[in-house]
Image (tube, rainbow, N blue to C red; front, side, top):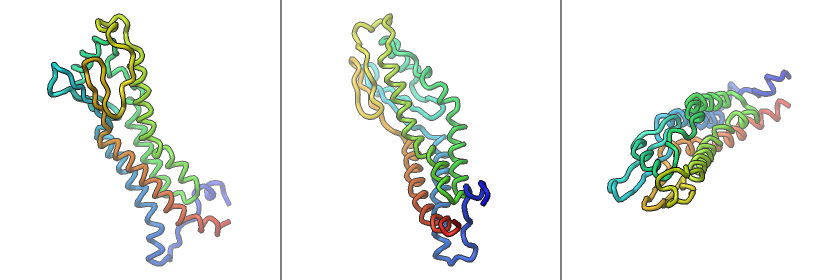
Length: 215
């Protein structure tokens, strides 16, 4: 058996009954839907922070997409300047520059996993499962980096101690209150991860017997 055939694995029986065909279609549907959700998430915000302050009774909000920031970014940067925090756009510049291409590659790997009927399919799908968790880990890294490295020359540096802004929930810095929430793009990424896990389980049920027979 060639190396490529060992990786790709056996094909589904052409003459399978209708009930058996559903077993082979299930992983295709689940993995394909997960790939679609990841691509849709590119156009939606993953995270949002709302800043509440006496001079802004309506609050200020910034939305974080995988490749850009929107909302009241300039206003929040202006307030952060007084406590010595760097502009938000300086965070995760590399990650934002490659995010669209990276997620597109993850979707393509999922589509490739549909045609691989061995355990290699799990390896192809693993990066997409990890993606939302890596996004949150990266967010935490940058929030911690910014909060713990305040400019000591800032006007209010003596009044504000270094801090770690929360990536979920409520925090307080001086007279300001922050509310961090996950947004729909991140929820779609987590849903995609769940579909991938279900798809890999269905994949194993469908193709493991065929792999064992071929061996």
